[in-house]
Image (cartoon, rainbow, N blue to C red; front, side, top):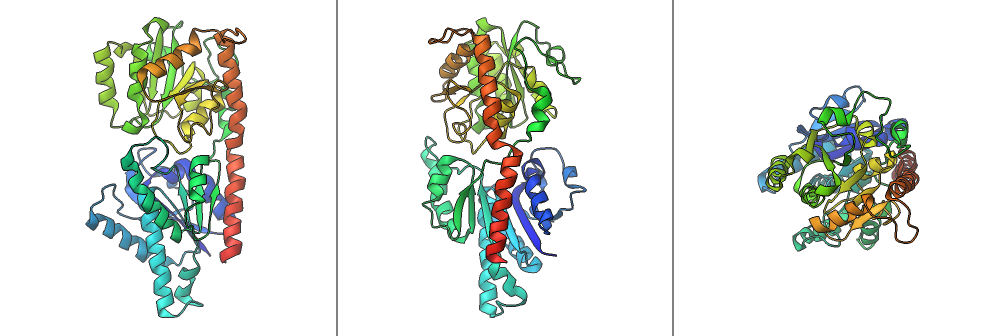
Length: 412
């Protein structure tokens, strides 16, 4: 059986975002292998979601640091795995694992050429296509200068990439100028399973209860007449949740609560900041949320002050429910949200800017049509529900299936 290798630095990424690609490859007759650091799990607490999937796992000691000894160890582990298994296709993700995988695959190709057995045995390694999905380059418009240190690395590694898969317009335009060995392509991200959100789409803008068991207001002590803004995602510095907390302090008169769904290193910092501002009762930390659609449906708006994104799934999920969105005007988000149509895009990351945009959702009438904000929020939600169809799992499935099939025709 032909074999395909998927590679990510941390475990959890494939079961969270790439299981549809696994299904496509398996349907195409591949035995799917997964190389990752199984000891570092993100998007969940363990590796149970890999059980029963048919995926064969391999431990690679990837680390986040740039210590030479640790990077060298992971590189050699990958090189040995690739040479031993003779994969017919390799698809890597994430910057560190993406670089090491492409270098290891190139090493296998060169060893095969050196041995002179290109048409048999190890010669298969020479023809192995390597795909790399950039889930948002670290460098983009508006990021600090230090982020551009990744630019020459990604540009150089394009020489060892047969398909450079991008997920937003800005990255795609830039990747087309890279010396890609194959070519750069663009997909609609990892896709969102819209049928999961259909039962939870907002129908009215009164306090809503879905068909499930979760009553957000009752569980977290939020008054019935209060409004709820919500965010979903890892509590990491780059997600910039502190801007939302500080913006909330500017909106005390709105009786607004901020429901923070997610876990991460910034939680204690956010808690302390809320206490300093005297709004700790209005900032609720829900932790990791499994029933995201049910929770989102009971909220009034989605806030996303992230400083760098590829094509955020969290925003797509809020769109699928039908929430208006206040988010940063950055790459990846502007691919999803149309300003004043699906919400408001904030210029910069100041709490004052976010406070203005959030207040506009609740207090002002539309300047041109004098539409009450309650109706305007509903219109924005409906716009988002229609817009997100372009990023559905079915759309991405067709795109990735076509890429895999094209690569297979070209190399196998």
